[in-house]
Image 1 (cartoon, rainbow, N blue to C red):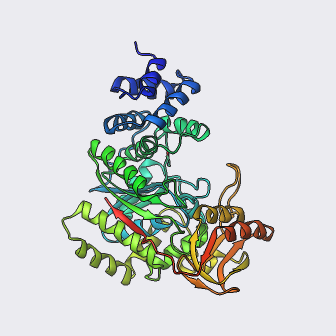
Image 2 (cartoon, rainbow, N blue to C red; image 1 turned 120 degrees about the vertical axis):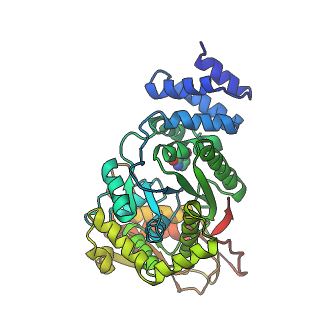
Length: 433
Ligand code: URA
């Protein structure tokens, strides 16, 4: 009989764990038979020593099997899911899902809420009055069969092992480990039942992964895990050294997503969403990338991508009058203009701090119990590489409670650096795997 002590010692000495040891750990910890202190010790050993491909895939498999596995076989055809590792201003799901559905894809998208300084798709969608994010699996399947896509929160008990392990990692400084992040994300994705998964691994000052090489290593690890389980996998490494698009905040991001579906989106967001959509179409057809792009451009230009978003919103109970007249959605909160205090190029944006600034305005939760101010957020007028003169508008902040502006402004301004030389601009898509 193996013991936790022996498993910890084996990993601590740099050895590979076998399947029975990984199974013993995941099942025992999920059941409450292994105490937190032993699980923490093993997580710390994994943090320092790492895990090879097979160990990581097996860890993921047992975490996936620790709870419900969603059966999406009731959806006709191939089901595609996309997942972003989380960023600031990341509304790509809200564009890519209707866009891909308008191009004939079946998109089964389970999303999460905001975490820390990063926003969450479910919170953004809930800024639309009436939109129901808590669908039963049957209703979710019906929605995809009826309109080609559903965007909802994960229901049921998906990967409970991850819930427990993530909470423990969060307080034992063991979050930033590639096998642990990869198994955490992929256990939930594999339990969600899609046939193909497109990953958007963020990299930079607003992401867990600060440099492209570690982001690519994480992406490759997740691709390998997915393939081990027979899934079609693709990944993008994308730039999170500045927010995606211009809007940060829930209703503000829905507005920007709608404008993008109508053909008026910011270049980085358009580029990312079109590329993700091409990838989804390549997974389910033999069309070339150019053919896919032509179909996508047509869906944007002829209004069918926007119409598909209205259909998805209506099908999930949302009041589409708030989309058709978007000024109703963004409302009339207090606003404040934030102006440049220096001349020069914006040479960098500490994106995490910009995310925190939006949380301080009320766009995210400072504690688990906080309510979100759906109208709060920031709209950037300038981004990295833009030149400004002292007094130029850099961003407009919005909040229902105007007492929040001062702290948020300080946090935002501290996030910017200026230079007299034009900085190098990193493209939105750094690498495709
Ligand atoms: N997101 C997750 O779901 N898990 C991690 O470990 C990190 C980001």
